[in-house]
Length: 313
Image (cartoon, rainbow, N blue to C red; front, side, top):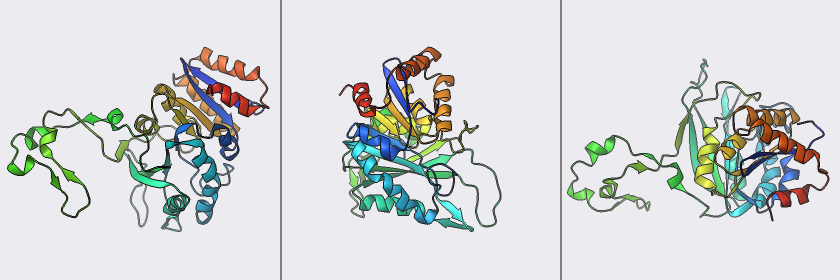
């Protein structure tokens, strides 16, 4: 993507991935009310020089709120926002800018539905005077309503070997529902699991770190956005990553046949994203070139009209 080209559309069969070089606060209003899922890993505090503002942790929540209106208005009423982020150590102590940011978003109308943990199965080795290896990160699920689109059937997993022994002989207390003693509203009925082959996964996602940085310093594994796209975006839905980096979310979305939009303010990262969409087999070379030609043949000036045409509104 040449710096003069603001937008490139990559096609895969009947699915499109639009890569936009720009600031998501400016670009997202063109997609108002269209997105089913925003899944992203924003620049961590003080972590990426020359990428947006490289904000100090003390100012991060305030900075992130400058994106709040654009994110909120872009989502459908049943849409979801998933933020992958982690705390930062400042002078040997964990800075809780992450939780301050989530609290600030909730004060601006978001519902905090769930906190997922990405368990890194191969964390980087190291030695610190008062900490162990960093083996996990947050993935926060925020929504505009308490009943967003949610499809746990799409992410079910084999139930496991435990059923053979646990369900072999059911006692009297296992044959009916038992509610939690602390009045939490939760309960269980063990007998309902007899004969089941699959179960919903937990909110801990065990995934390996990416072996190479893919031309970007903080690439999350493709399986991370893949999981949330399956869970939170319908098959005909639209996925947006407003801090797209090297395009991992786009690779996941196209592999599932979901339309997607990647917005990135670094021209270099936009180039990397397009390169990965081609090289990792999601978009074939001729498909990518066709997308480039179609964009070059049109004026970039009327961005809003092109968006409306792309999504057939």
